[in-house]
Length: 137
Image 1 (tube, rainbow, N blue to C red):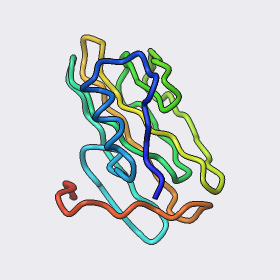
Image 2: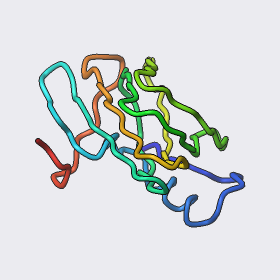
Image 3: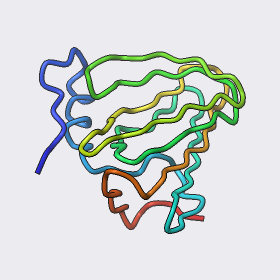
């Protein structure tokens, strides 16, 4: 089984340990709003200073910003990315067989940061099984 490995990343040790445990964590939002045979729809809400931990994307997906704000992410390649979002900003991702992205997301702005994320379940990679403690609507 493949695992995440943050060896050599210039990050605090607690983040490295969390990253290394993130392989297979398919919870990409706080609330699973809807799930069909085709898609999973997630909501993510972060208060200023709040952070969602590392999660593992393998499915084609897109996110849209519901609110404007600013974030910081630690990425699977060791980089740290800061981003600004306008209301309605949207980004699409595609993953070929075996491709993935692991990252966290921290709200470094002064307003609540809200996203909707839609994952497409049919694709090059098998969806992660979700933990039974995922909040569902």
